[in-house]
Image 1 (cartoon, rainbow, N blue to C red):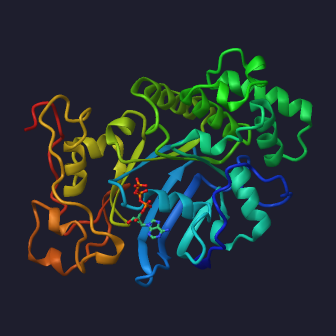
Image 2: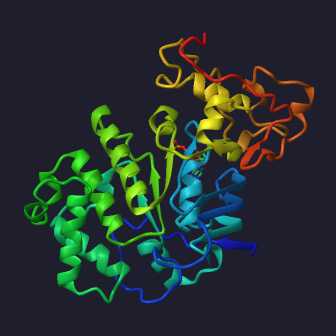
Image 3: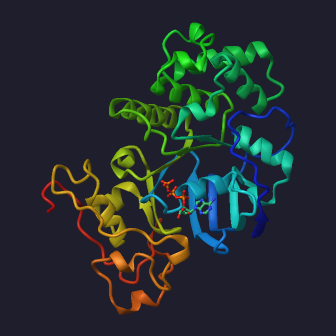
Length: 360
Ligand SMILES: Nc1ncnc2c1ncn2[C@@H]1O[C@H](COP(=O)(O)OP(=O)(O)OP(=O)(O)O)[C@@H](O)[C@H]1O
């Protein structure tokens, strides 16, 4: 169903609200094999210079039990895609296209359904875990609140038991005593585990992680990603991870969605995209990733992406593209399916070899 929605300027819900009782979008909701689907999503934001087209027809989907990484440089539209999925864009934002979460039409939702969506349909994990934790409330109380907001029929005792069990599940030692701690008593890595636990107790259909490890040290980053992968494997949790750092997610993502200047330029199974990137931007991102270049020379991507106000007429990547040709300046490449489940938006899409240690 196609919709056009003006969002009401609701700020991201740092703490779950407890006032919803209805709705259709939740972890246990029926509805096909898709946990989250964006189809031709366009987002326009008002600004002093006029309307800014931030997303220009973004499509990707996350099957149940799948990990999808949304990658791209800063400003490519990753966060906007995630916030659009939860209708959390700033006041005045216009969203066109269609967004589906666990079988429900997100752009057609009313207030109550939206609260339900945010409480248990799709839960957000931010880069900064402290943003999601109330500094004055005990960790146990925050977990119980999250569980009971998602399922108001859950008794306080059952919610506490679920909270404690989930803390153990995400690797928090001595969960019973941790329940009584306040956020200032824990480390950044533990805080992110607790934020993940707060999402898990709500049994969401999909976890939306926006740069979930960027604020953490390298060892903790790896542990949090391992935790996400375990939760995906053991609970069948569907996960989206937005990141500018392809190294970080290449090992755990089933599929990659590469964004540039508000568009998806390439998407497909991770292994295939690493072995044979087809879009020059994907290739450039891979060559700029230390882990994936495997000790080979790193190639920074020269230049910078265009801002939404200065986007050129044809291909947005043309000014930085080593394979550019005349038509790229005037013809906007539409995403096309080059293999089953693999799309590329490039007039050439010629394909490159895998980026390896010997690549120079
Ligand atoms: N409220 C806003 N008003 C104006 N422009 C915005 C607003 N929010 C985002 N943008 C612009 O939209 C584009 C996409 O931003 P977005 O944050 O979605 O990208 P991103 O890929 O998540 O980048 P980052 O990793 O830096 O968060 C950027 O050019 C950004 O400047």
